[in-house]
Length: 109
Length: 114
Image 1 (cartoon, each protein chain N blue to C red):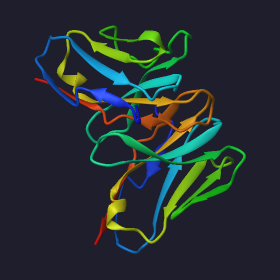
Image 2: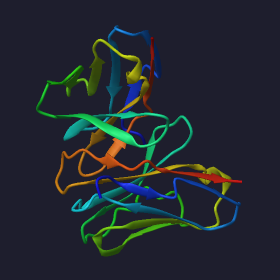
Image 3: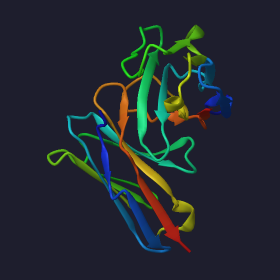
Image 4: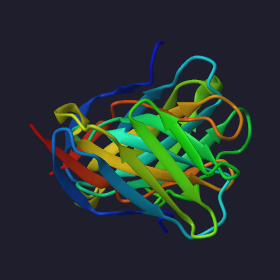
């Protein structure tokens, strides 16, 4: 069974706007990661947030984690056309990550 | 190598035939994972290898699927008597030992069963 569920399933914004994606999960986790996938192939690791962290930044990315609500959000600021991709959250209880169904982001130039 | 290498990148096979998919992980990465992604869907966990430990095969969908990892490095995923529902992108990932390490994914093998 899948652990993470992303919301929304699809998002379309104008270049320069911010994009926010949410992830909800069901069981306790050790950490949560966000990945990007272009063209339905390999995923690229973006950021990892541990269960004892509440917020983390990496460049234009900001990730928050609320373990009490079992949810995380990924914010991409000042979006670019190159950010067009699918974004997945992945949660880890022990050693393997369970991936959500993803958010398809389209950034319009 | 510099990244995770998967081959072939694309495979078209007839229903009922066997296929082998190969994954060459990053040198030194002890953990290796196989996932499957159907069109427009999330990633489905298949199998996990960690060093010399027994693999976690809990995600394999049927006994037609098997995988091995030789010498703690290259892994082969075998699908016997392929069915049309096996059509998907098969993704391999590796990571260093220890929790909380991001995966490095290969580019995947797109399998089409006709």
